[in-house]
Image (tube, rainbow, N blue to C red):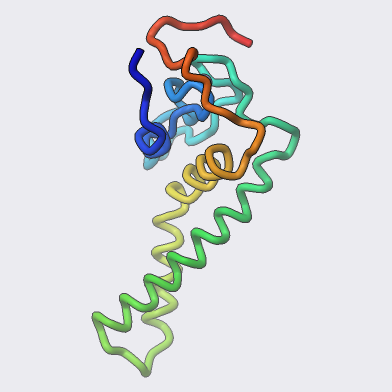
Length: 135
Ligand SMILES: [Zn+2]
């Protein structure tokens, strides 16, 4: 039985328990629905383990935002050598935050479930093509 590597499952936004079912509906960048499935379509795991569990993803999202803002600010300085206008920095950082919001929405929840949730474990027996019973 082949196992799905963790990094692949994380990049693709798969369920942390079976690494098969999609955590999110639709593509990352779309104007349609961009929401988290309540249950894993493959193994039936409830993604929001406890009520309000994804509030914790805000802290992950905050950390992602800060690191992206610092990176964007530094890149803006390195590329333009601008040290007079704050508006250039404001525009690039706010624009970057806006463009990266769907990315942060998804990966904050993925990081939360994969790395910061001690109760969630990978179950290799669920990592199969045939659909196991829903929990
Ligand atoms: Zn699953």
